[in-house]
Image 1: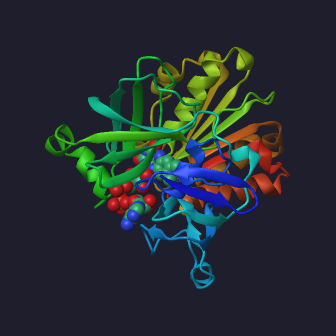
Image 2 (image 1 turned 135 degrees about the vertical axis):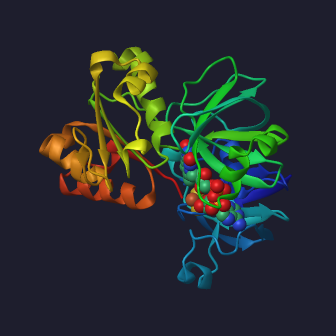
Length: 330
Ligand SMILES: Cc1cc2nc3c(=O)[nH]c(=O)nc-3n(C[C@H](O)[C@H](O)[C@H](O)COP(=O)(O)OP(=O)(O)OC[C@H]3O[C@@H](n4cnc5c(N)ncnc54)[C@H](O)[C@@H]3O)c2cc1C
Ligand code: FES
């Protein structure tokens, strides 16, 4: 364990095989972050003294300017000595459930669309998280990727993920290969993520694009069982390129158990299909809700360009940033 001092803001202990971000979060500190995997740049720090190992020097979360200024990513730095670092803690980032690493077993897998595999993992301890959060999945102690839970927290230790195959993707190709996944040593570290379900008075808009379905499913399922949200309606916008990327309305109704409170709006961006809206999902939302969008709490997950378009739309309509919660899938 190394002692890490955050200049002017206290200290925490970080294990030699952990990274500074997760070491701090495990001690309940509000270190700003989003993706946990080097993509977003939210966890930038300066190391004022001490030594760290940078696990991914070319991580896209750091610009050339950041590198020139000596900035590093807390999610990619392991301590090699006691350190003093500079960052600004944020109360909003204090974890509501303290993340931890645990060994899991592969329990079940099933294909839910042509390229999305639902993976069920089993832990010995209860699966504690807030709908909308994600976990880091470690395979064979070398591959680490973030995946959002699509189920609800439970005492049975069940963690369900919906994982989209990425051409030539290291982790997804391993998980889609029956033999490789059967003999994989899997651990999960979590929960993480701030784009989780909130108990707010407004009706809800969920926007899922690409592989962003899992956390939106969890949010919709969370609304269905939360007594504080029992009258909330949910608009579920789901964008895919083609029809085969989308779920059917019945599938979504069965999964979310929201009954008449669910409004499902699928849309395709590269294929025209009778009865389904065409276009990018932010255009469809604008078309369907227009200025009423401001009346909603917005949750969104998927590829960074899609999330950016939704943020821009929200900004145009004057939605305060506290009312929009997103995870970009880098
Ligand atoms: C918060 C969050 C939640 C996500 N949830 C889901 C989900 O529910 N379902 C889903 O299908 N996908 C999700 N993703 C995307 C997922 O984490 C993977 O990026 C995706 O599955 C592709 O992984 P791959 O290994 O197959 O592809 P690859 O192309 O091999 O890897 C892509 C990703 O790996 C990481 N990476 C690459 N090189 C390095 C390196 N040297 N060191 C460290 N990291 C590296 C980067 O994050 C990169 O974007 C999520 C991503 C984030 C950030
Ligand atoms: S949280 Fe470190 S780069 Fe995204």
